Each structure stands twice: as structure tokens, then as C-alpha cells.
Image (cartoon, rainbow, N blue to C red):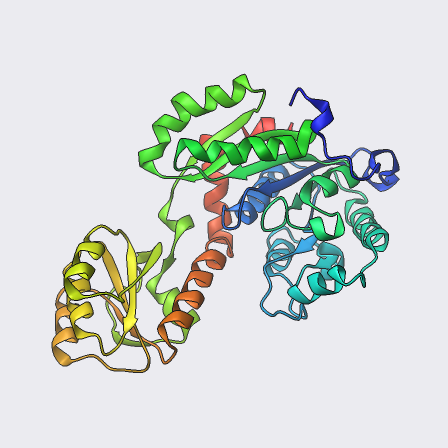
Length: 374
């Protein structure tokens, strides 16, 4: 960015960056919003650097992907990083701050000392960076998370003298407003933007119109990664396991689901709605036979998830089996099931070695990895 005055300067920490980081190339991978593939990108970049012979380290200063409100359960991303990168590091260093709802409440009440938190992050970084050629930092759920304790991603980049690679989604031109706002927040520390999970319909416009526009604004674009089913959804089998569902029609375990739609309308409206969707699971009450039938007539519906512990009629199950559409049954209500299902898709897309390997291939094929790593 050309306007150095936009650099986040809440704290003058650049000169106090620890000696342990001297000579260590540090990249913070941030994102505009949750579920942009930030974890997969971070670990893929670290793996690519390691394959070139660099000694790499990882850190997620703020754990945000928690399994409990209390914060006793650590974020799973550092656990995966420790496994994939073969790191001999304690989880409390890999994730020095558990950014749970309880932590946030305590911070708002003045029970968390900002200086102590910054010292905790810096000390953990020093330990992890010692002897490393490169450090890869994973940002929070989005780049603004942490503002309550003055530890947004921009604050952390300044604190730990990190360059920033920003992962961004893109569907429509208006999405670029958020990219420019983030560029202002990071200032000169932003090295560039990586667009990820870009749908086919938006890909050409992004490359031909948006990328030149951003580069005219001194925002480097590292690459444009196309949407991939393996990275943007979960299989029916994974969904069933996570929801604790009973399989009423077993076909289609390997089918990918990328989105959910709720069947809470009349049959005619439901059919029109379902026909406009793609790669979706319909979540509806197990006693809504007319919704089941409408969903099974729509080619974009890949799975039925029936709630409330109700078993559908034999006719519905027969129709589903004939069309190879898996049917899952859960005992929870529809709203609870939707929330749990969406959480499975959000959290399940970057949590294994195969997904990170695939991201490495995408980065190699569609991004300037050398520019990101310098």
C-alpha cells in the first residue's frame, strides 16, 4: 500500500520485536471472514517451504475454532499443524490465547491485562521461532478478531514483525470493498491477496477485471484458486458421523454436500426452491412427506436430513433409494440440526492431510508461491 499512514499503529511494538525472530521470515495468513480456507493455505505454504529445505514453525496466536464456550478445549488447527509439520511444541505455545466467549467476557470486564497478553504472545513466538528459518502465523476467524484486547491480526503482524498474506473469497465485484478495507487495516505489512474457492461463474471476471483494478491500487494478487469440491464441502458419510445420524437409505456416502436448505414451506414453493439449489442437503421434519417428495424431485438435492426423530413413509424411502439419494435421520429439531450441520461444513473442510496436500497442488498451479514466500 502507498499510504503508510494507514498502517495500524495502536502500539509501537515494531522496534521491540524479540531477538528470537531476527533472521526468521514470518508470514501471517489472515482472512476476510471465517471459512475461507485459511488453515489449509497456512499449512500448505508451510509444507511447501519445508519441502524446499526450510525449517518451519507454526503458531495461531488466537484460538478461535473452539468446541466449548468455556475455552477448555483448544482450537484443533494447532493440533493438526503439530501433526502435519512434525512440530515438537506445546499447544499452549502454538495457541497462547484461547479466544473463547468466556475470555471475551472477561476482557470486556477488564479482567484481562492487554500488556500481559501481548507478552504471552511474544514469548510463545520467541520459543517457537528459535532456530527456524520461517514462521507461519494463522490469523483469527477474520482479521478484525481480537480488537477487544488490541490483538487483531494487524496488531499481531506489527508485534511479531510479520508480513501478511490475505485469503479472500470472491463472488461479486462488491466483495472488493472488503479487500480494500483490509488493505487499509494492514497498511505496508500487506504483501498481497490470495483469492480462494472462487466459483466458475466468477473466475474470469475476477482475473480479467478485478485483479488489474487491485494492482492499480497497489494491492498485489498472489493468485486465484478455483472452487474445488474436496475443499468446499463434506461427504454424506462425514456429515452423518458428525451429526450422529441414523442412515435410512445408505446410498451416496461419498456424495459431497456444500450447502443446506430448510424445507419449511409448502410443497409447491419447496419444489421451486429446491430446483434452484445445487449440491445441497435438505433439512426438514421427518413427518413432512410433501417436502420429502419435492426434494427428491430436484436434481440439486443430494441428501435428505430428517429431524425430530420421525421416520418417513416407506414410499419416500423407496423413492430415495431409487434415485440414490441418501436419507439421514436425527433426533434433534430442525433449527439445532441446521446449526450443527453448518458447523460441520465450516470446520470440516481443512482438517486432514489430504486436504492440505490438495491445497498445496492448487497453490502451485494457480498462485505465485515464490512471491508469497519471497
